[in-house]
Structure formats: C-alpha cells, structure tokens
Length: 295
Image (cartoon, rainbow, N blue to C red; front, side, top):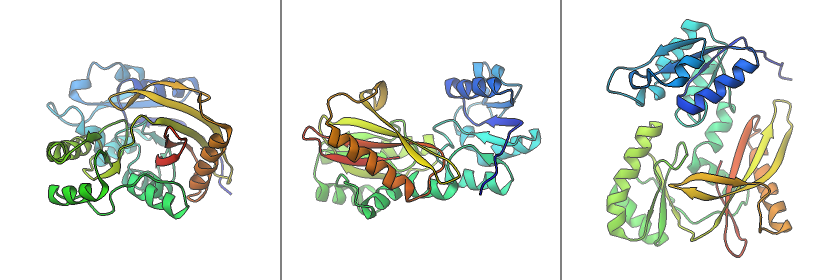
C-alpha cells in the first residue's frame, strides 16, 4: 500500500496564470515554492509569486525552455524540491519527464508514467479505448510521417477531417481540413505548432463531426485503487478549440447517454490503474451517438 507523502517545497514547471494558480494553492498549504521563467517572461507575475525564481534558457527563446527536461531537473535538484507540479500544457503530459522525475527521487505531481504512456498520448489512448469497446471516430491507422502518406490516409477516411497533435492539448496542432488542397497547407503547419508546443510533431487524423456536443467526464483516483467520476460538463462553447464556457451538469443529453459516458470513462481509466485527477473527453452527435476522443 502506498504511503502518504507530504511535501515541503515544490517547483512549478509552467508560466503565467497556470503557474500563479499552482503557486497560490501551494502558498495556502504553506509550502515553499520555486518558479522558472524565460528572459521574455522576466516581468511575468508568476516569477514574483514564488519564494524563489530562476531564469531558464536564453534571450530570444521565449517558450522552448519550458520543455527542457534537463534544465527543469537541474533547478529542482539545486533548490532541493520534493516535487514538481507541471500545471497543464508544456511538460504536463510528457512521459519522459515523469520518468526522469522518479529516477531523480522527485515526485511528479500527476499520473504515474505508465498510465500517462497509455492514455496521455492520444494515439495510444484511442488504441486502448478500441480494445475496451469504447466507440471511436474513424481515424488514421498508420503513422503520418509525410504529406504523401497523409493524403493517402485522408482519401481513405474522407473529408472533412481533423488534424490533431498526438501529444498535449489545448487546441495546439489542430486543424479542420475539407479538401486535399487545404491539407497540403495545414499538415506541416499543424506539425510545426505541435513541435513548438509539446516537443513532438506527431499528428493523426479523425473524421470531423459537424456540430457535436463536447462532453467531458471528470475522474478522480487515488493510490489505493479507488476511482470515481465526478459527473460531466458540457464544453461545447469554444473559440479556436479553447473552451470558453463549461456547463455542469450538461444540458440536453438523456439519462442513458450520461450513464454510458460515466461507464466508458471509468472503464478506460480503471484499465490503466489511474491515480490522479483526469478528464475523459467525448463527442456526442445530434443523435446522441458517443465517440471517445482523448484523455
């Protein structure tokens, strides 16, 4: 059985509002805090909300240093932190970072690396969901390493389709394409955006569903085998693939559909022994057909 771990000092491996929220919570828990910032973020408020702060990277490189695992761990060890909180985005879904933290004896505040490997990567998560008989949107079945392969796979799936980044989230690396000419332009743009945001340019395709509801089920697990859902919310109001309004409970879906959503979410996360807070995301079409999309 896992022992309860208490922290004395944490590093927040993020920036801006995300980092501020974590730092504020840590302060309320009376934890010592360490922030990191790039040269361009040297006046960012999150730097001044921490007990200690350190510059990462060099001038002219405003975002990539937040993906630098070696530098994050160097500062964490230098400061003697017990744990690293990645916030969301950047290194938060990076399996290698979670593993390196464990190797260095630093707690990664997030899911276990093996669970991240199985459900954090969208391609792996869809494969597992298929094995568990969760309903899926038709998508790419092979690695999209070049535009020629991408065009062939797009013809098989049929337009319109969605390009998505395999790593990360927050709408980065996403594009809707309705024909081959749009795909030729959007493919490299999506890969470059994914590489810049997550350090991984892997993308995949999904058939685009017009006007669905975007429903998310909140999951919470612990290290003692307990896993529960905290019901659902409707996140359909979005701008540039970023959620603007979240409504809970979700209006205008039937009771049977809700129960299916809860069952699918718990089934998936139990399969990987999930032990943290997580969100399982679905699309629900106008006929209330459910499609798993990501964790």
